[in-house]
Image (spheres, rainbow, N blue to C red):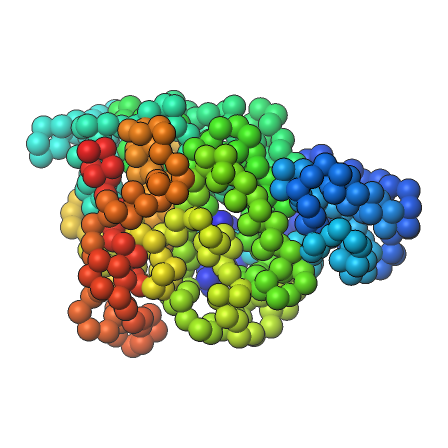
Length: 508
């Protein structure tokens, strides 16, 4: 779902060039390097990863695996529960051959070439903050004890989380899985609430649960650690407070080493692993490479949409709720047509016109998720946030360091949270808005453990603070660069969905 890892999500910055695809595949957990006996792999073309969709049965999956091996491919993993097989092949005709097999509903390559950009949803470089050396806890205006850096956390009062925590900080029986670039669970402001038993590295499509596999790579992948602190940094007298400081957080790493790329097979693995390990909520602040919009009417892209949808639907039925970030391109996701100039981002992108109802932005436009837009410190849509009537479910603070600067002492329009190696920094983006909603969802789940994912999504919307459209045309820059039109009513509109998330209502 980082910007210097961050970036091209909705035209962000690029990261340093990453490793070659063949090297990346060699590092994938559980991948088999030798091809099975059968049709020899073609000499031409790179080894690519594919997803095959068939019937959700042992017999159908077994047949699909046999077809892969006969075609000279390698089976990486298979999910009988949803009828999805992940395979590798260097044969450029492999996808066509699989689609021609009886019993294969769809098949498609999850990538087209080595990639270098990242796919998270934050904007700009982090601005680091040093916590007080003595770790003091300041007293709030009402005498309540605050975390050392809480005075810089303007999002907490915006969603009334500071008030909510006096009633409930959430239950340790609830876990939010951060599907992302990995989480540094050694951070002193994350370690107390970290669930190692529900953490893994899903890169390549197979869950690696060995100790520390879920941590970020040493290439500067800080995104997941920042997201985790927004969700559940504890009130422990160190640094900051999360939206739900009493719940647990886990890490399911899905980003490629050196590139921070999010591929279909890793995301499918993450949703399945979350279901298997009893995770209640997932946070998804990314989109799935290499397509900003994956079109159902394309043979390859359609197979990716199908595989991810199956995994999400299965995990939802197992009790997992999914929160997604809507993206940072200031796009109207409800438009009849949108221009995509960044796909595929692994070769030379070709400008194309897409219908988002046919070509969804995954995972935020898939059914059953809670899609989150971003607000700044003034409670207005962030200049970069995507929007769309019927596409945005709810809004939350994600920052706007350009046009919405909070009063002192914060003075920074970004969102402050944890970073690897015990650090703290401000970042902005819908990546930061999503985890506030995931945290509030965890508070609701803590109060009512029986609530289903569907009920949880509706409670978030029902409890949100209705936020009307801004008066006049939204154009914070004054030059039309970030202009957007808000449509709908005071209670449901294209900028804020059902309104801004409310943590206090969640615990009451």
